[in-house]
Image (cartoon, rainbow, N blue to C red):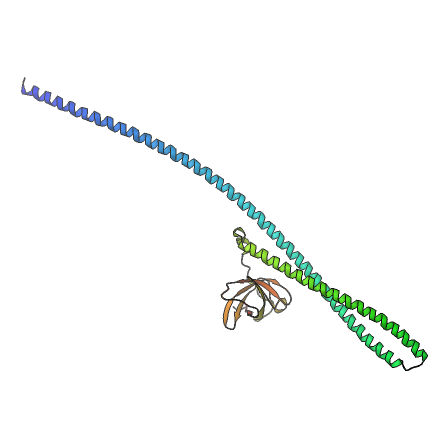
Length: 286
């Protein structure tokens, strides 16, 4: 055998070995790739299933949120209707209170007039006792008239007592309605879905009189307070007044209800305990 033939045989054997190694390596790599592809397919299927589950959960959560929003809107509408009803009842009761007070003043004036008449008649009867029979008969007539007037005085006194009790009852009802309105406003302020609507800041309103406005705290009930000045002093709805004691700033009062001689509203930015007698002020230039 020649040298070339030997070299050829050796090269052929080496190439066969190399080809076998490459084939085995390629087969092993192909098997690994198939396992990797199968693993990726399983992971993709699991991810798709998880995505579908999350979509279902999100749709259910959105449906529950829509139901919650609808329920809160309904509760807000009911609360607003209740506040309006209480406000109307309060206005009606205030009108009745004013009428009752006017009636009481009229009855008191009539009682005073009758008492003056009774005093005059009694003096005349005392002076006529020493006169003759004719004057005695006139005295009897005057006494009968006095008895009638006494009956009228007793009747008017009873009516005055009844009207005074009615005025007291009306005042208690008005106070109860004011407390109900204050409690309802506190509940609306505390509800998360209602806060956006109720807590909307009112625009600052200029007073109808020139110059600064001064007054005092008349009553304090939680976050609400009333003052001893009203529309006759230039106070208007939406006005923001400073509350202070001496030179110490205690907070602000945002006016929400105005009457001729008093007003009330909600306290805000409170920096100290606000008490009856603390000063309030509004300056148009501030």
